[in-house]
Image (cartoon, rainbow, N blue to C red; front, top):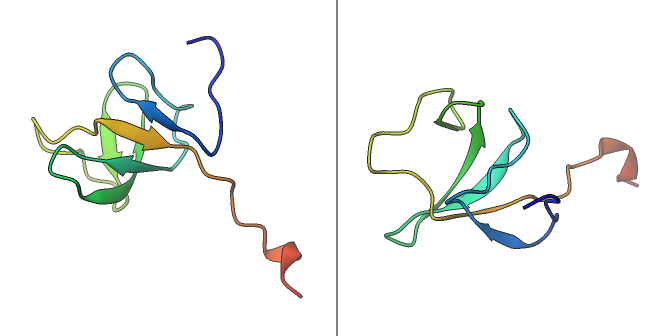
Length: 71
């Protein structure tokens, strides 16, 4: 895929988000977690590599929170 869309679920096989960009990941068993692709493998929100066989099936690139938007 030449272009990755934000606010769309993308299959994780073959597609990867930008390096170190946190995304919402969906796993085979249906649970969700915030993860990032470090250029070599998936990493969980606490900086630990995801266990073998626990890689996401899909990921969602969300718009980043901007504290300046708060009233």
